[in-house]
Every structure is written in C-alpha cells, then in structure tokens.
Amino acid sequence: MTTKVKIGTFNVENLFNRYKLLDYERGSPAKKKPIDPEKFVEEGGHINMLGWSIDDFGPISKSARRATAAVILENHPDILAIQEVENLFALLAFNREWLDNLYPYAMVIDGNDMRQIDVGILSKYPLLNIRTHRFEPQGSTPWQRTFSRDCLEVDLGISKGKMLTILINHFKSKIGGGADKRKRQSERVAEILKDRFGEGLSGNFIVAGDFNDHYDSPDLQSLLGLHGLENVVKQRLPKNEHWTHYYKKGKVAEQLDYLLVSPDLCEKNRTAEPYIERRGLGTDIDYFKGDRFQQVKGAEGASDHCAVFISLEI
Image (cartoon, rainbow, N blue to C red):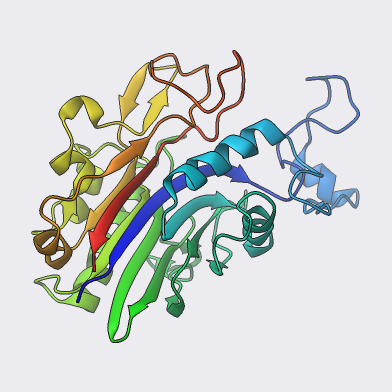
C-alpha cells in the first residue's frame, strides 16, 4: 500500500532572526553608514541580535514574510526542503508564528556559510536519521570545505517499514564565479548517492535544493547526468516553464531550484507533474505576468526564488 506525499523545495531568502550582517547600521540615515563586519565585532558588536519574534530585528518586512508563508500554506507540502534559513530557532519561530505550527518536525544544522544561510527541513513525518556533510574537506586543506552550506541527508519515516531520504543542498552562488566549487559539490553529491544507493540508484530518495545554476551547465552534469535520476521540472513541464529564478540585471530566467527524483520513485509516479509556485514573486519581477500574493506595486516578494512541489506515491 502506497502513501501520497507532497514534497517541495524553497529558497526562502534570508529567513533570519538577526540584524542583517551587511545592512546599514540601525538609526543611521539611509545608505549613510554601512556596517563593517570586522570593525563591528572588534568594537564589541554582536551579529546575532535575536529578538522576541522573527520580525523584531532585521530588514525583512512582515508583508514579505506573509508572502513566504503563503507560498507554503497555499501548497501545503508534507515535506519541505528549505534554503537560506539562519538556524533552527528561526525556523521554529517561523513555523510557530506564520505557519500555525503546521510542521511537528524541523531541523537545521549550521553550515559553512559566513552569512549563516543554512539548509533545513520542515516535515509532517518523523525524522528518523540525520546526517551532515558540512565537515567534508575540500582537497587536502583542512579548513576548506566541499559544501558552501551543507548537503543535509535526512531519512523520513513515511509509514511502517517505508522510508524516504532527502538530500538538501544549496550550492555555491554565481557571485564571484563559483563554477569550480559548484562542480565539486555536484560531483560529491553524486558520490554520496552512489555510495548510499548503489550504481543503480535503487531506493526512495530525492535530491532537493538551490543548485545556483541552470540544468545545461557543465558544472552540474556529474549529478544531473546520473542515469535514471530525473529533474522533474525539465522532464515533465513544457520548456517555457523551466524557470524558478529571474535575474533582473541580466534579464535571464532559468531553473536554479531542483527536485531530482530517484529512478524507483519515477517508475511508481510516471504521471506526477511538478508545480512551480510563482505567485510569491515580488512585483519587481515583470517577467512573470501572472497573479501574485502581493499585488501592491513595489511590494516585496516571498523570495527571489520560486518553490517547486510534486506529489509522489511512496
């Protein structure tokens, strides 16, 4: 007997409980006194200025967080892989204050990003096993790490004797290049999959997250090219739907956010179609002409990324 489970991935863009590290100092005239992080710490400043609630500190408006919540509540995934969350405290606060404690299970493990943008998970199903790859070294240099954030590996108990594994990633961004780093990350995730599920990739698993590059990029092919592993956005949606992020400066719409589904799950779910939620985009993204959760001109969006969802029989 199978169980239908809705899975999603969403880069929630700076889900913080603190003062934004590179923002301007509070109380100073706009764009007059930017924070110097090193000086800030030297002078006794504390970067993690936590408030009583998720909106007490930081530049993210309540309207933006309302839109972030709407992306989740309107789609109601059973399992959600999340990128750009500060820590478990922030994720639990968001679940409590904006999602009405929809998810009884949540986890974030601090990764390697200096900005403290980590990957995490919200789930209605229990988290049976959790494995971090944040400490894996990059080459022979002990203080350099393969993953910019982490490759968070989570086993979820779907029903008695039935398990689903999700590997949550947020690869190196394109800012300042990053191609070599993304290539190493893609190769390592592919190795993790083959070590865990064999060369035939046998089992119930999904690789989710923000890969920060389009599916045609050579940097991702060691992962995307694994036999039988399906990028459901590319394989199951028309080409004009193959975008989850719009880069305004370069006017480029491309897929950066992925759900890669295992061969076994694909075989069981041949007709399942993914859904890309674009209603959370801000009104500044004029590439998208559809309805939005925030209709007021100039309103902040839920994120600069679109969430991707799919319902699968497990």
